[in-house]
Length: 176
Image (cartoon, rainbow, N blue to C red; front, side, top):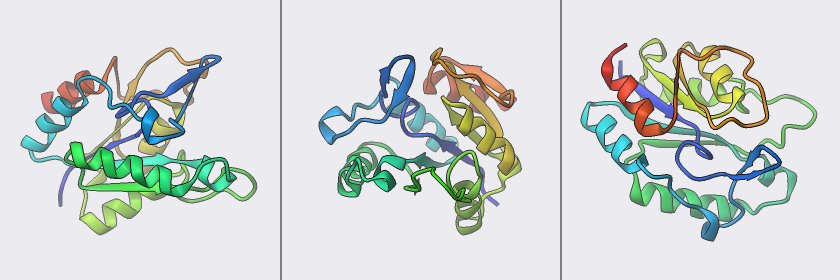
């Protein structure tokens, strides 16, 4: 079985738009900006043999406030610059019946693990919101919380905390 690092998208890979202390995804490809150190972190993880899987909620598509084509264009640009093995996306709007794939549910990680032969107990989930940490824990992964001081509280404690994906990649590579 393989080891993977699961990565949230907004706030881990690309710069989120922060309004009133809460992060929001970019609305267009023009607003999509890869964060500093992300390319280096991904290159180091790939060189060490880790699979890299993006797991992202994109509920604005399900709510009808963002076009799926715009999200897919962002993903195409992201994958053109970074060595991801897979991008898992949940477009569920998060209203009404809960989805098994919308974080904090672990469905995206479980599906990727099944299809890519990933050992979740040897894998990591890196995110900047409580949903990411809860998702990783529910899937049986170790977790790293990138703390930007958003105006929301964690529900589960992460395995580690970091200030950036580059710092988080050093934790993964340290073998702790």
